[in-house]
Structures are given as C-alpha cells and as structure tokens.
Amino acid sequence: MGEGDVNLTETARTLRRNSTDAESLLWKHLRARQMDGFKFRRQEQIGRFIVDFVCYDKKLIVEADGGQHATEQKKDEERTCWLNAQGFRVVRFWNNEILTNIEGVLDVVRAHL
Image (tube, rainbow, N blue to C red; front, side, top):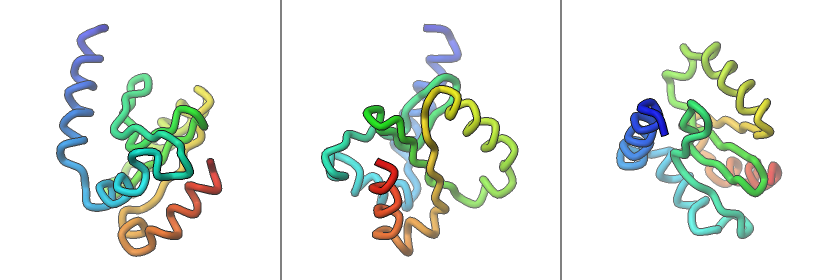
C-alpha cells in the first residue's frame, strides 16, 4: 500500500464521519442490506477515487452530489468514465432530490440493481 492509499483511507474515514444530510438519509435506506438484500458500502475507495456508495455484487455506484458538482462537471465526467471502464455503473442524484424525493431515488436505485 502506497502513501497515497493511506491518505485516501483517512479521507474516506473523515467523509464517513462528516456525511451530508443527503448522504445520511440515503445511507439509512441502503445500509444493512435493506435494499432488496444487496450489500452497500459507503465512502469506499475504488482506484484513486472515493465513491459515496457502492454495491460490489451489482457493480453499482450511487453518488450524492451537492452544489460543488455543478462546477466540477468535467472532473466528474472523467471519474465516471474511469469507473465505467472498470465495469461499474454510476448513478448520480442531487442532494436536494434525495432530501425531497427519497422514495423516487430509491426506486431508481432499485431499478439499476
């Protein structure tokens, strides 16, 4: 494990401790195999990235995006392309959508599973 891996591990731990309201709400519904028995992990390192939620069984990544992602579209596209090349599907939701329409968000996640 290289020095960069340690930094990402610490970053992932910090992100888990400091989840946004939207991430916390979504995790409440994804954790403990509540989503049709599928196991999700949160703030998981994949390559040089940390993803919000991942179901390895279905190679599905669920991202909760805040306002900062509107200005980081190119970076997000590159990240999604790399994750797709590794065999993952990435589904993104705006935090506001998660907070105001959690059932709709869960329906979309369920459809991708």
